[in-house]
Length: 114
Length: 119
Image (cartoon, rainbow over all chains, first blue to last red; front, side, top):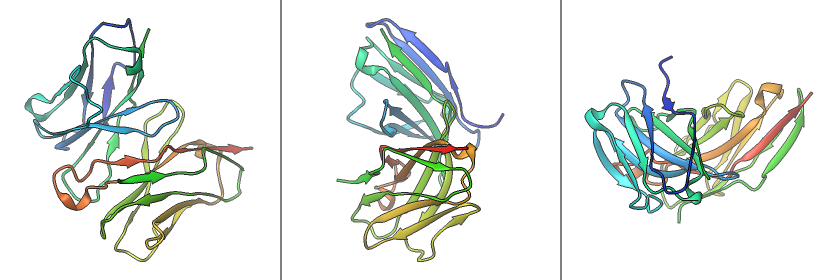
């Protein structure tokens, strides 16, 4: 399977714990995006990488959130000191750096904070 | 503000019939792309169709077509001959910073329309 892969698919954690999600984009894509999707809403942009450089972060991304993309390949999204409001689906997408091309999405990681 | 509005939270259609999902958006850009994405239950989001704003001709992909009204900032999706596999959430999306470089593929999504195709 050469699509965007996200792990884990589901994560249940206790409030206050740290969690880390992984995204493996399509190998030739140099752009990688993280979105958050809550129930009944469309995805909301969190952050964006071009190769290993994190070029933009949304105001939604509080200082408890950090994302990395070492070596410009896979990416990780870490949430520290999780809160119940962090419960959501976290989506990763990748695309080539060509105007108008589609973003390819992973299946997402569903986080539940109890 | 760059916004996308989908005014129909839920719709249903009988198999083989035609349904139209609406989307309006707000932008000050003159050239941009518009997208419809489909998110089936528990499955990943996939692109259904895209429209380039500078093209007057409406995009078509098999049973899916759009009605793009640039002046009205309207971008509706028509699904013909609906099939059971079309049951999904449908999101309208566009990159509001398309002409500003850098994150020009960051997408703004509407809240989605849940389409149910009934047998």
